[in-house]
Image (cartoon, rainbow, N blue to C red; front, side, top):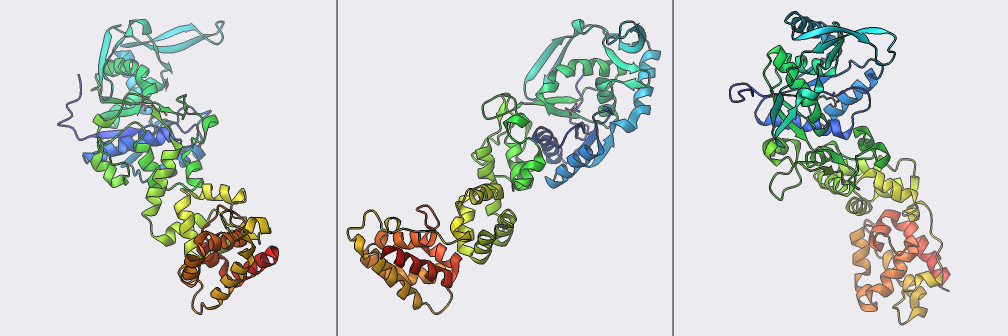
Length: 450
Ligand code: GLU
């Protein structure tokens, strides 16, 4: 019997096991449960499944809860499975008393010479069909499961039993979780039936795949949410990205805030096929979300990744134009840092070594005039009496560049300032380097041309 969802307020839950850091799979499940509940003004709960004492830690629990807060997935209540031992035991006794389960003494699997006591469910062995909101009807023949074990002892229920009791006690109406749990569902339904509990609505989310369509794993790239935050991804961009891992709005819109997702989300938009974790898309989304922030905030985000690289830090904090150039080119602080570390911005750190050959534009029909032009650029820059900015520098040189041919003037200037053919334009470089350094570099280039 499916729950009558029209009458009951929706309650969803995410049930992470604190046996590892908050990873993107759990974050996606948490998000979908949050969105589904909030869309219909229902409740979104968290259950920490910490009964595996050997592998569960407080640090992982905190990492999961902190991560959820950071993403804005505020829950309405939280329970720990380990604190519900009494409730589990009571339900287990109830089943045994009704002879729906029984204590069985049998040889231990690990050491057949030892006899252990387990609790087994009396499995009626029927065919079970449940409706999955994503995949439609799913049928299992439960006969082959036999009288499966539901507890190691009357005080130590196994995972499936605890999940069923907890979901029922928490009033969970919708179980939205990863596809890897589909095969667990028939066992859980058999336990529900034995306990006379209502069946929640099920929705199993598609697997998250690495770029090569294999299973996403640490070896294929970062899987922990904290790693993405450390790389400089914005929580809002991660949320947007996670929402699109297996769901689409049915429109062309791809950039969503959390509030917009709450309005747009529905289980109808969840796909069956695996969802590829496309880092390029994540980078693009990060840029879209970052561009929504005030310039100051964007600047601080980027600067926090180049701390300690003095020349670069100074250039980017002193020049808005240089920062704008960076904001256009890089999605995250980590990308910027990688470029900086590979020397792409070495010209902000030290004066480049330039040769005559580098300074002459290859299409210049009058290469002997390169030095002369650089000297004229210096003269024109002397006429700037206000701020030395991209605009004032451009204005001072505009007419000359037009009359001499842009490439003939701007190429040697860019080379003199950066020593690179791929760099910000010479006006941005001039602003970032400042008047004294700009002129000094131009003069050094004049010497190189002579
Ligand atoms: N604890 C399970 C996990 O981390 C989730 C169980 C469930 O959602 O039913 O995968």
